[in-house]
Length: 227
Image (cartoon, rainbow, N blue to C red):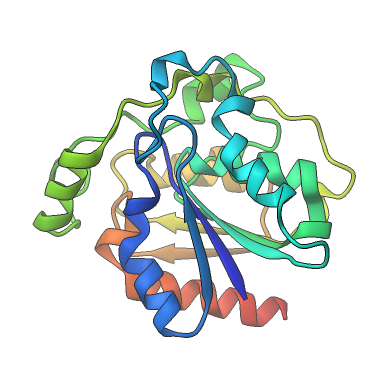
């Protein structure tokens, strides 16, 4: 199994360090990449004019994937938009299944004013206010590495791909989330584009920090059930 982990707004590949370690120790292949203007990518986030530009690193990854290879996408928060974009573009030909972790799962992106209102979490805090269950050392790490969000995220709009609904999707709902509240995850994401499975995790907005072992358990369980 080859997993591709997609970070949310302002974060980078670095945020997955705990989950990546657990997955690779368990024998899985894992790719963590920085989107444009995120992580260690040198692009100024203010200069990115479109969502397509922001998502280009993930698109390039798929374009260079060997012909018969498929991956499992895992997107966090606004990273769900990047996952959905790839589902529409590549479908079942390249994607085995997709996970949305406290993530945006609007099928067509920001199409209406209500989508803008409900589709993104509040601006994340750097400490315990928004991530009350995240260990202090991880909160400090976030405060040191978080970058400004790419505004082009708000211009994400997608046209239905030919087999977008055939890619199995799993939603992991964070029950103690103060950034993207559980009821909003349910009403705006899960209800409007129902996934194959839903798991509830005892976590704040960032379960890869606060509850990585349980997060991995849900991922492995869902993959096994699909297989």
